[in-house]
View 1 (cartoon, rainbow, N blue to C red):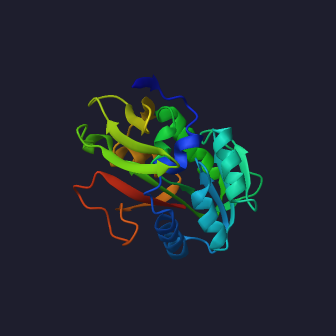
View 2: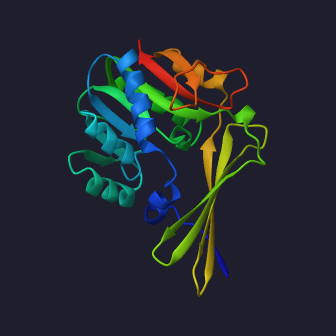
Length: 247
């Protein structure tokens, strides 16, 4: 058995890691929210798009969809999945677009990849500038004060002769503006077992924090993190689906 640090490029494992995610349900829910609260336009950007599964669904819904990510190997895979779309290598806290957009999305808690509160503020301001009048920004978020460090998510997948176990968990030390996403991958077959570990340092906020940051730019609504139903956020919820309408 060998254990190694997992390098930044997860592109080779990304789709296997996310095999249990219902991208269609997530995309359909956000499309419904956009239909309810948006300006009727169809120009869409997916931030931190990864290998492009959400972009694929929005294109199939009839959107003019594009994506950005900071990982070029991910974007290469996204371009194969969505040859109709334009993908760009950009940081979400500093991105630029050529024309105003009607919908900007950021799925899978990727908004936390902003390095700190200043970067998160820059990201929000850039989203505001990129959106057309009445445009919608939709993302999901976990509240730092609701994180249970003992909880984790685990699932398995198979690729050819290799079996994989993926595990992820949030960790918050109880103070400060950073939390961690801890990841591990175990790959085993008949001859060997390999284990990789990685930890991503991310921005940490409460729901009150994020509402304060968004309020100067957007009308903000917090919903239950449920892609099958559109429900207002419960008081004890630890994660939320956030919809922002440009003022």
